Image 1: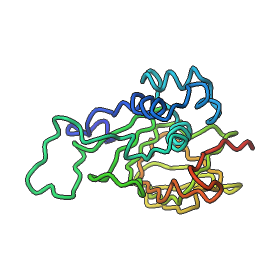
Image 2: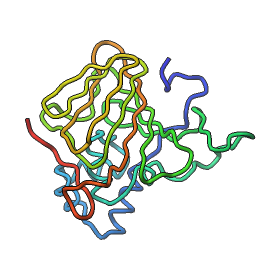
Image 3: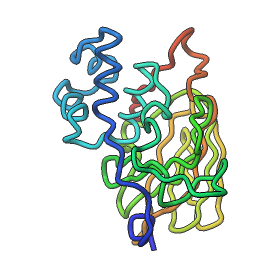
Length: 215
């Protein structure tokens, strides 16, 4: 049973658009300029900011990094109405963790209770046919990634190498290498994913900027 099917599932998905728009406006960056920097159309950025379109994994990473934000900023503050149960302490429960829905039905659930700008600790779901980015536009960004598949079969391309990870399979790689994730077969993929130091991109002196890399 998937996370979205659990009777006591996570909270409703976080609307990320207004947070992206507020930070863009705070920095004084025009909508068209942001679109130019991340390599997408102004209309797509507008639709994302209005929460009318879910961004792809690669587009969200590109926008967030261009704005100098962290994924903790995107997930936002602890939701109103969230009840802290006795004994919760530092633990996070499935029914209370923040959620982001992305393009193609990809789903991220934040596994950390406290905000951490240096680590992204996520439970991810890739529905059948879903991918993090197009085959001809692999994504790159700063940091290192570590993944562990709990169910389904996940395809991972890092540079020119391709891997198939079944349940129990794991992978680790430098995020500055062009990479792509996608679901293989007729079952959705469920995995635990960690990104450490996404902002520490050695290619730029300040803020790292994810780019599309053509085949």
